[in-house]
Length: 193
Ligand code: GRF
Image (cartoon, rainbow, N blue to C red; front, side, top):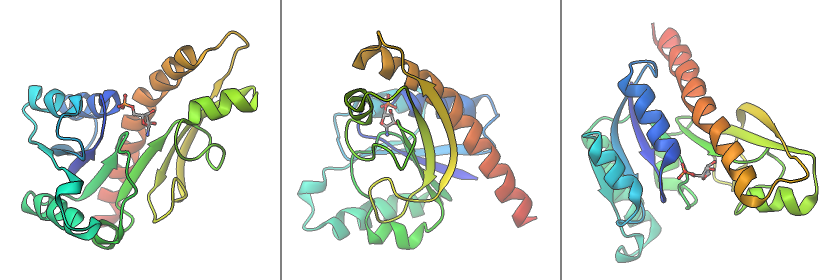
């Protein structure tokens, strides 16, 4: 199974997925890393693992459709089967959704449907809840609304700051995302057989 990772930032989740793939435990190969920020650190990280990394500037395209069409052509050129979003700060539009329906997955740092959108960690802290977590879900046209695949809770301690809670959540993410994708790809392979 061929995988593309989409990310906009540092890419610690992208790195966890790439490392799992390199160890041969993911059940798929990461054949492309795509970013909507040509200067994002994730692109250099991917290149350091010899994975083709593509930076796009959405605003240099006439429309979101034109941007996604260019991305789609890249993905199709290397026969990508699944798209894994890992800190991709953009809603996936109809062009990519139509071609990869049911084959785009996202990771979000809360127990969805709680705290969708930006700064889920800050939202949880401000709400004063005692636990938050991580959700891995299929992507649909909404913001963090697609069907949930897997969730794990993360307790919030009274002393937690934005920084400490983010750290705890990321530690969970780095284990959960590869595990979830491994299971998903295994099921996919069984269905195809
Ligand atoms: C993660 O917390 C992920 O859940 C969210 O964006 C963050 C990306 O972090 N969608 P990183 O770039 O993988 O470190």
